[in-house]
Amino acid sequence: MKKVFKTLALFLVLLLILAAGSIWFYLNKIPREAVKPFQGTEDPAVLTENHIPTNTNSLGTSKEALASLQAKKNYKKVTNILVLGIDSSNGSGRSDAMMLVSVDSSTRQIKLTSLIRDSYVYIAGNGMDKLNHAYAFGGPSLALRAVNTNFDLDVQDFVTVNFSSTKSIVDALGGLNLKLSKEEAKIIGAPGEGVQHLNGTQVLNYARIRKIDNDFQRTSRQRNVMTAVLQDLMKLGPIEKAKAAEHLLPMVKTSLSNSKILGLGSSMLMGGYSIEENSFPEDDTSQGVLIKDIYYLKWNQQETIRKMHAFIYNE
Image (cartoon, rainbow, N blue to C red):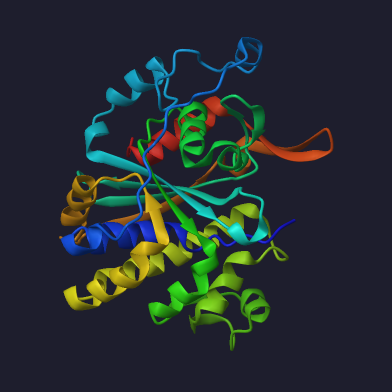
């Protein structure tokens, strides 16, 4: 199995919101890519067999799902952004990290939701496959559509991050303080367990750890990194934010407009946001299976959607 670099995606979108939200000059340095509507064809038999709705909009959200979302009390106060971490060095073109960043301006919460990449989902025009294959089939727009269709969401924007820059980005921030177990410290070459100040290489290795547990724990480590980064960014003054933005923002690509970035940034810069994290599908509503000798994570869609929506929309 290929190595995954999962630590940068959320960190960069949060930096984008925090720094660029208050510094107009840097907005024009962010590479942009619009969300593209699906241009392929669907197989009606596959849709019927897998209970996939046929009345989806250009973003992959069904009419029923959209109506359910719009009925939620704080629907208009929550902004969801899909974050995709891409490792171009391995040539696969797959998204090695998929996360939702949900910013709730009404409760002043940031929800970090990791999406398990092996999840068995429907991908428009490609049938049933692993969730992380959607990016390889159709880039960020198809990945966003897959998330909306399978999890009954209406995510409208994405951020992609190329993980080839992971080490230099973390080092540019002066490293991160992370709490390590004895096993984690040994694997990444840290002095010992407990809180340690890690450089870019160590953070990268921390996110890659596979030997001691599973994908659920790996995504938990990823979110630990994101939380630490966000907390550090909140402490930076305007000059330090500007320096970080100038170095880091060109390394991302996003569909977010300047107005959305400014709106989110101005709210978040007021501070007072708490951070919560989770991953879906959860361990108790999913199980690994082999289909034609390939591993997939099959999951209870109804229960997963219920729990995910409750988490994101604070129900």
